[in-house]
Length: 446
Image (cartoon, rainbow, N blue to C red; front, side, top):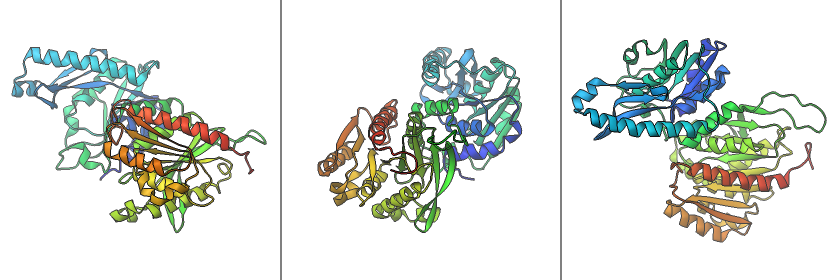
């Protein structure tokens, strides 16, 4: 079994954990990669979600090799065999532990902010990671949960090597794993998309869990906005149907349609992070797959900007047939090659797009259509993404609409550096709230 990404893995894992639903469950995600998986499990079990912070103690001259792990509340696990084989001294171990303890406390503060830690006393605790390699951090997490009063600890992961449970002894009461393939070299080999999860994405998971978008809320009277929605949808685009995820907060002021970059999908963790920030300020979001599974097999389709743009136009037309969305102004958010498709689509006659944002985008791929774009356009690029900065500057010179170029210091193309994705998302949020609110119509039409 190969997982599309951590979201896909979390949804599949949740189906194996349904027997815990209603059992006073708390879900704890191991940051950073375990959090998108844990979010989907918590959502499916209707359970609170928190982060459980542990740090691997890496061998000084080979940091990727774990010689133990530490967790909150002073939990400490040491792998004596690794210590013996590598010859790490007590002083070297102590030095690594002091350094990692500082980082552990910093991360706990960053992830939770002002929120108190979720009480575990008397609860069933489900510890989630995106997979098991050595198991030292997951073992520390289970011990932390025990120390904080959990009466039952369940360790659940999408993938692990054969015999993985033997490493944990009595640290967990139940083990759940979807796949134990052999040979097993690394967790990432079982994911199509194993991109690094950022701090911002961890925080977004916690925020979404703490403030879920209400679903199936009936309208309270004439003139009110229709029901809120947070669901998977099938979107019609010409002759094909594409998978999508629609989130509609109450009293939404606009809707932003996402066009992902090459090699990505509606499950893009970065786009989902941006979407979360937009949902929090009352903007609906639609993330959808630009291509069908069969079309993705032909790599040329990924760079057929004209076709992708027309998909976006078709999806926008579908959106405007939805009675609870038709009155909302539409914005486009494009990443990488998706930015070229977004600008091309925005230039279509009668497109009526209220705003466009490009993150790490290739607006140059819209070519001669750039001069026909009328929607206010924001171009966001990383300060260390030199080639793309120049492409954005050249594209900006061809735009005739209101536009702005924002360079995020310290960011590379994927905005993986701490704080950079958040900075880009906040600028995008402000652009959309400013321009979409001005174009809102009353429900039912102009």
